[in-house]
Image 1 (tube, rainbow, N blue to C red):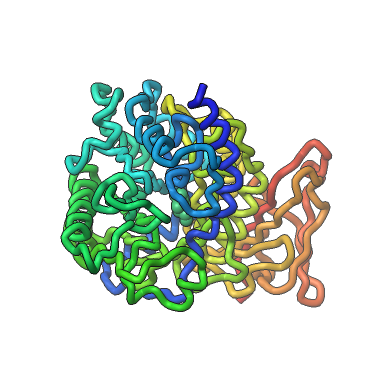
Image 2 (cartoon, rainbow, N blue to C red):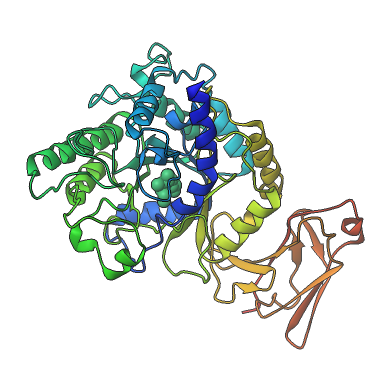
Length: 479
Ligand code: FHN
């Protein structure tokens, strides 16, 4: 009975916490471009992909609650005052004894992502709760040591990476820099007041050195034993050298201790790149040589950015699986994708598998519907780059990398009919050239009057039953 009580509390927590959590990773202002030619080449390849899937899967899928954060004692985590924290923690850690995803089928996840038109993956090898979704030798707190241990796919991350690699995806390993389970980060000797390590590293250097060694060894395992990895996506930006705690960082409002939670990124990056040449390091919000692209979260920057970036956003309201979650419509996701790409970014869309190892049917259905659009309009998205005049109202513009094509993407409001014509200024088609509607492959009538392009839609598309999230036009640019 008590467990159900917890579950009820945690479901309440899910929504209130999501709001609080969205302020955890604002984006850093500065950007430092990589100089390593292999990293630059990989970054250019990553910038071609435009659309990825981030998968949060771990202990939190068992009860269907917010990922890890229920363990944290910060005031935005609304846990019931009658629940003793130690009892809750014991219960949470005990989930490792019941997590047994017998229907784990990563090939079906990869197929769903491919069908949506996604082209890169980021998978939670370890979230803040310290539970490992790979067969690490550094601790027994892993999926490979619980009831799933004898399953042929017990080394979960290996099979997730393999399945998505087989579908042609670039592969990203999400790894949480903080680990709330190991005694080297949260020392049982002291209370855990917030997300940071709970002892003054200046007084206990031995313990922090053990944590650095533990972290290095786990990342070394991921870089050595799991095939080609293209992105090391390091979450938990509060774990950062003290000297990187600028006024901007303090303004974000996250609790930052007086000591330096420095895990020696230069050493980690050198090892990672020795094993995975050119790998992209995404040390979120710790701008510098190891944040090869920036990662605004649950939002789209107001303006076009001139350096590589990605918006990570949930398909539903939560990163992991939560029962009765509210899923975004395919139109909402496609409009976000179009705006993000026109502003120079990529969309990393969050999906949370259930505890049995399957994707929620609603997620599968949404991804299939999104794929109906990307399948016929992808030329305006994949491999494109930005143009200065990137938005006019509900119309966004992109260009092919070789500048031979411009694309106009006209977002259509949910439930609205396709307009009989669309108009825009600038970004003019070349005189006498064709304007092609990507979804039909047919050229459409167009003219320019006083610098305004007017494109007419074919009658067949104007029937009220024909709807689309966006119309995409391709044309040669005037100059
Ligand atoms: O704290 C995490 C959160 O749980 C989730 O993993 C997101 C996904 O980008 N990252 C951090 C919040 O910014």
